[in-house]
Amino acid sequence: MLHFITPPTMPNQDPRSSPEYRRLVALAARDDANRQRGIRVTKVVTGDPSQRLAALTFDDGPHGWRTIDLLTILKRLNVKATFFVVGKMALRYPEIIEQMVLDGHELGNHTYNHYRLPTIPLSLVAEELNRTRDVLTGIVGSPTRLFRPPGGEYNDAIQKLIAQEGYTNMLWTDDPADYKPGRTGEKITELVMRDITPGGIILLHSGLIATMNAVPIMVNRMRSQGYQFVTCSELIQRGNGLLHLQNVPARISRTAAT
Image (cartoon, rainbow, N blue to C red; front, side, top):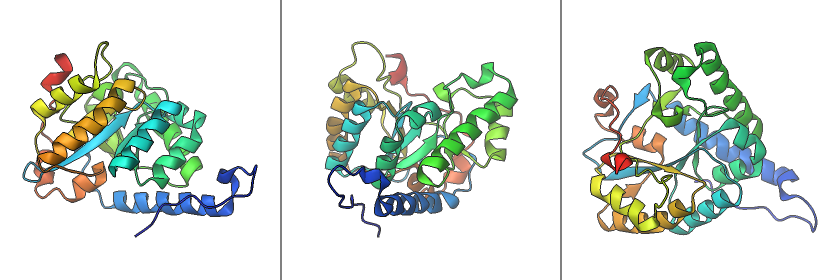
């Protein structure tokens, strides 16, 4: 098992420049890539409903100190999540991308500019995927096999392109709309707990204070009900009978409209 540690550095030395740090990032990213290599589905809406597993996913980041604080919360809770990152944001905060990988989290591609994909030419959709793939490979040394379209918006042509590019379109079952004005940690948790089912994939965002407040409450309540938190690739790999579920229409949780 790979143990994630921060190597010692000399005073005033950037720890990210040390060979040992670079080696640890590369090892962690390669481990992540190896886990994803076994994925055989092109679209996932839910995990196996017979297993009390759930995946926390965070979109749109990284967002500077807020994402750093979120990583601290997840580490304290011993929860591994999947971060669907925007390429231009990853380029702004490469050190946060590295920390995600070192902490054992999983990376997903969320396009470079966060465009609504059905509104742009298919050639530009491909460019959005490939630019972010190049950014992540440049930062951690390995690409990701997971992709989530902004807003969950795609069509048949985009789905075909996603598959051709070697990605799994990773959708969700539960969206508490944590971005809505007035949301609190308790409200986000209440909405998730109302609708969560085994195999659930929970859509959250990494730059929101209300979400950071919700995560510890949500994790503790779900664990009290027997849920185990896994990354998206682990949810897929442990999904007995998952193959027949990949064509189920995405069920955006009722909570999104509440």
